Each structure stands twice: as C-alpha cells, then as structure tokens.
Amino acid sequence: MAGEKTQFRIDELVINGAPQAFEDGSASIAGAARWENGVVTTSGGDDFETRKRVPCTVTFKLQFGANEQVTDFATLRDAQVVCRDMVTGKRALMPRCGFGSMGNLGEGSVAVVLNVLSQIQWI
Image (cartoon, rainbow, N blue to C red; front, side, top):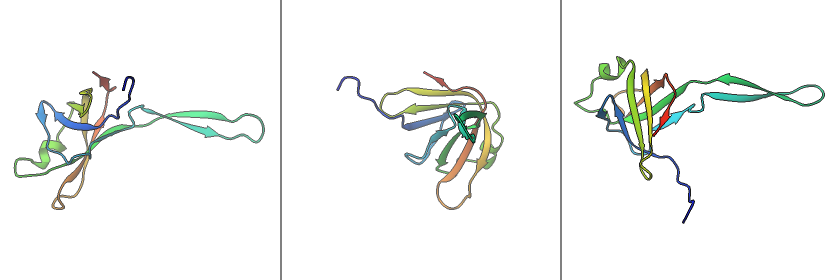
C-alpha cells in the first residue's frame, strides 16, 4: 500500500564495528527527542509549558557468552553505535556513546545500557 508506515524495530546493533548478539526485540532507544515538556498549571488563565533536557540511552539484552568480557562494555568511551531497522533498513548512527550500566550476570541475557552523548543521525 502506498504511504504505508512501518515501525522502527532494531534487528542489528553494532558497537565500534563489531556486531552484538542480543535478544530479539530487546533493543530500544530512550529519550531520542532529548527534551521533555511538562505542564504548569496556574490558578487562573492559561497554563504554560516547561521544557527540560532528558538523557538519551540505548538499552539491549546482550547474549552474554564465553567471548564477551565485562570490561569490553564497562570501558566503552566515545564508541560508535549503529542500529538498523529490520524492515526498511534505516539506520540510527550514534557517533559518541559510553557505558551506562549492566544488569546481573548468570540469569541469561544481560541488560546493557549505553549513554548516547551526541545527536542521533538518521541515515
């Protein structure tokens, strides 16, 4: 159908040129707009908006195996991350990312959060 819209769903995640094995459907980008608006109510008349910055992060569930080391992720600084959409092939390039946090080991896939420190480039 002409003009049909598809959702952006990440099926490939590459960090500094190395593809990552992650749980299907677990990768997401939070705070991509980098701003959040809120409403401030007034006692009379029109309400108004406030605007604040929010952090941008990439979260995924890494399939942690024998080839992965905790330090490989914990020491990430200024890493280039690329996410690819499974349907359209559209890519989100994040040229400057750093380690945010890592979940518990030994429970299967491990939740990894990377901080996105520059604007996302949609290519």
